[in-house]
Image (cartoon, rainbow, N blue to C red):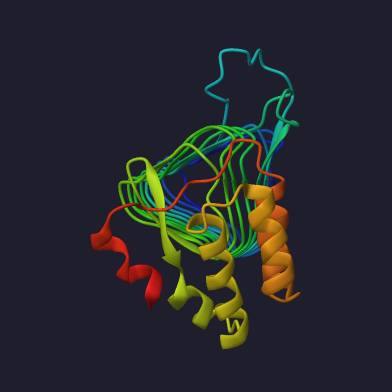
Length: 270
């Protein structure tokens, strides 16, 4: 175990034998760090925080701090972090609240860039990328392999679907559907995240079905339920299409709508 002599480690902290702790970092009593974790300089890890294997926490990150929620009164809530995640400089991640289920969760292979904030009760699934300055309100959920651009703001309780991408400086106050390309202030749907779908190995036929599904949702003039009925009849039964339908049906905040204006129509015909 390589721990810098200036680091402050509570005797109750649970550290794997090969953990590295940089200078002037502080590790609290209820923190657990798995094998292969590296904590940089001037970091603070606190709260009931469980961190898995091979996580890298860079300079100045504050992990496991109390929620920025005025209702929080020091209840015993937690933060759970999986394996192989990367927290860049000055990232902040808060523990959960009782009202939100008690736990903030981050999966595996997540990359969170500098100055981003993950608020209480957020759920970040595997493979997510959050670029510099991404800001997540409480109770936000981000699906697998979604990409959140720099300086994006996600309103409390917004869901971001898997394999979607949100352009930098966007503001999302409603759910971001899976597989979509989103941008703007407020955020609007521009079309499919074609590059993300190709990288994920989604077959061309399924991509065509997803494109048709988005056209029915946003360009047909149909109500949400009527559009979903058409999607069910016309767009096959792939797991991706079914996931998209379930996501839309379960949305409580509503979903981001499509971009308007003739200059944007080309995005829908590609």
